[in-house]
Image 1 (cartoon, one colour):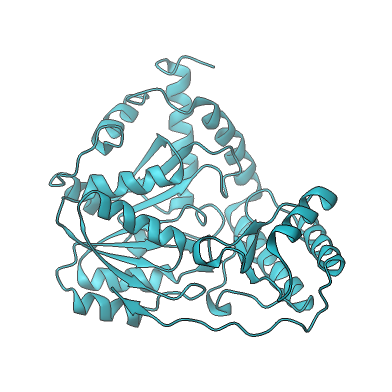
Image 2 (tube, rainbow, N blue to C red; image 1 turned 180 degrees about the vertical axis):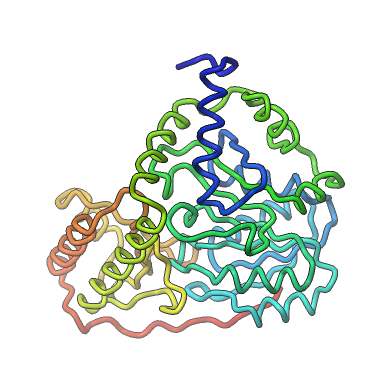
Length: 353
C-alpha cells in the first residue's frame, strides 16, 4: 500500500487514465470508482437523470434488464424495448421505439450482453440515438478492452466498464468515460447521489486523489495489465479476441452443439450455446470442474439450465480454448451425449413494453 493522498498515487492515477483512454476512444473525463460494474451503471444513471425522466431501456438479456431496473428504482419513467434473448436490437427496432416515445431523454444500451453472448452493432444504434437527440448511456462492461470502441466517434455520452473483464484484474473497480453532453445533463440531474457523484470524483482526480479510499490494489493490477496490453497492441488484442471467438463457435458446432446467439451478432468475448437435450447442467458443470479443471458458466434468468457459456476475454489463448473444447467433448460423451441429438429450440418474439 502507498499513501493515496501522496504524489506516488497521483502519478499512478494519471498514468492509468491516459493509458486506458485509447480503449474508450474518448477525449472526455475518465473516472474510477471502487465498485463492481453494476455500480458504474448506477453512477451513469444518477448523474445524468432526474426522477420522472423518460428513459428507453433496450434489453437483450439479464444485464440489460439490470440497467433498466436501476433507472426504475431511482424514479425514471422507464420504457423497455425487449428483444428476444440471443438476438440484437436493430437500428429499425430502435428507430421505431423512439418514434413511439419521442420524449425519450436517455437510451440505455448494452454493448455486449454476457448472459446471451450477443454483441450489438453499437455504431449503428448510436447513430439512431443521435438522430433523436437523446443521451446514450452504454454498458460496455464485458466488451471494452477486447473489441474496438470509439466513444467520441460514435457519440456515446457515458461508457461503463469493469476491472474483472477484458482488463484481466480482480473485481472491484468500475471505470467510466463521461462526455460533454453527459456533463451538461449532470448539471441539471436531480437523482440523489453521494458516493457516485461525478463532480466530486472529477474534482478529486484532477488533484491526483479520489474523494474516498480508492481500490488501490486493483489499480496496481490494472497498471500491470495495461503495460501488458500496450505491449501486445490494441489491434492485435482485438484480432486475438475475434479469432478465439471463432475458434470457440467452430469447435462447438463441430461437436454438434447449437449456438444460442444470432451468428450476425455473436460476441467476441463470450459464447453461449444450447445445452444438448438430455444433458443436465449441474452434472455437466460438476464433471468439468472436478475432473477436468474447467469452469464454464450456466445460463442466467429464464435461460438457467438451458444454455451454457464459455468466456474468451482477457488473458486467454488458443491453447486455452482448445483445452476447454476437448474437456467439453469428453465430459459430454461420458454423460451420454452423441452429436446429432440436439433438437431445435423455439424463440419468442420482440416486445415493446
